[in-house]
Image (cartoon, rainbow over all chains, first blue to last red; front, side):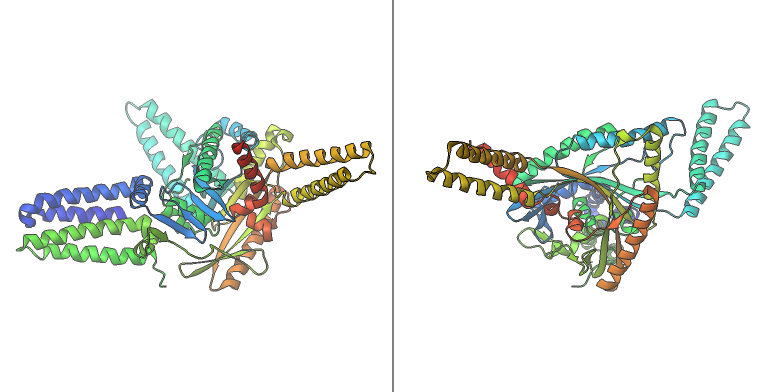
Length: 268
Length: 277
């Protein structure tokens, strides 16, 4: 909705550029820059937001004694003469639990390895950290209808391909594989499992007598966590920008599903 | 202060953009005015789009002083009178959150391969307990050794006093004096080893949030949900999940409870002494 509205406005300005006389070209360039700006905000605000706060020197006061410094890469609490710097990493374990992308034997193996890997990671960490998963289960019937709809479409494609005078074996195999995956998901729904929207992140806190000491210690801790959690085959990224503020508020209250979807891309 | 929702801000800015765009079409004979209006249209267009992510920063940005963008100047929460929930007031709404302790820790070394797969599947099932957003977490926190360290420090001080008195006294034997000195060394070494290194513990928890018209309603609903979740987790994992209270609850939220002050101060004092040397 947002991107559509903004692009439409910019395009209408471009269409109307002829009525600006000699400045029509300038208006067109500015309209194109507007579209570029909206795309940057949409896809790369983790670059834009910290850039703006750094350049303008803005410190965000999240709550009493808590602030996000101008480089927007952590949140700091100053209490009793000590700085507590908290940073966040995103994590996505959907391979392990939430998605049956593969229906072969290796899924059980992955699930069996998960507790061992988790313990190995915890044993190798000597600083405080917290692993969080925010979940909200979806309506089973709505999700089932979606899956059955997709399966129906694939059945039609498969029968069309097989009815061809020269059927493409690769396409047939691809379609059969996708149908197996959908069947596995429908089967899981039948056994009582609910589809889940989820968001995972890891946070850690470092302390220091000065802000710099705490922030430097935090950077080391985050690097260490990234290295250790890589053994899980996860995609781990450091959180920078406006999302720091939202993750901070999640420590105290969870948003509703609509807000979660709006703020982040929910990992399915 | 009027709470401005994202939808309201988006609507106002979108209407402004639309009106300005319309005006550019209604001024065909005046290219300079039309161009100026187009510039403003594009500016408001970007602002409208940015409400997707930055709506909650708009009003604080406009009220910014000395480059401090104040989202909230008060404490982020207040503790419920019963100590088993926290109350948050934000954007004119009242929320309450409750935390559930999950005392499940069984080492993977004690499990067979089948049990490990089952455990992972149980975890997956626990995540679908409720349709409302719920947070599961596992945290490694610093054990609060303040009382233990204070106890050792008191014993050390007592031993040192006795040693001082022994040195002054002429009646004490050499063996007794050596024993007291040994005791001082023992308490000193124990104090050094316990206070310089942090000890950690791992715990799991769940969190749920409810909104309400007032504090009591929000707290009641949050605790009801927490009870349901605790019952669900208890039946899934076969453990006794319970609602966290007091300092235990604060440990799931505040970094200064997750890392106790005195324990941290001792470690940092030790670091500072090493650096001086």
